[in-house]
Image (cartoon, rainbow, N blue to C red; front, side, top):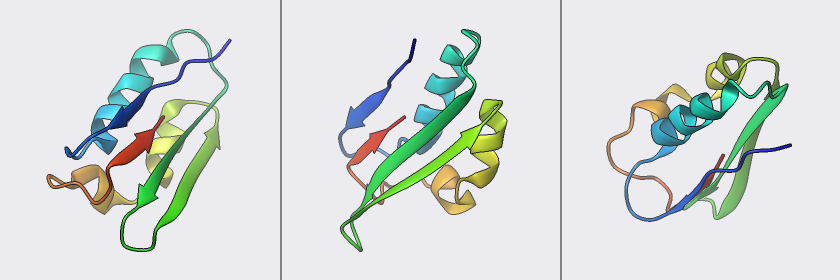
Amino acid sequence: MCGIVGYLGKRALLPLLVQSLRQLEYRGYDSAGISWLDTQTHQLKTVKATGKLQNLANLLPEALLQETEPSTQLQLG
C-alpha cells in the first residue's frame, strides 16, 4: 500500500507536503520521499529516506522547509 500527495501551484508547499505525509505515516510505511522541480536548474530533485518520516525531514534542505515564497511549482510527496 502507498500514499501519494501532490500539488501544482504557486504556494511554497514543501512544509505542507511533509505535514501531509505525517498524516499518512500512521499507516506503517517504511519509507518516504519527496520530489520537486527546481525552477532555477530545471531539474527534478528527489530526497528519499527509510524509516520514520523525520528521517526524510532531516535530509531536506532547511531553506526549502522555511521558505514562504515558492522556488518551484511542482512538488510530490
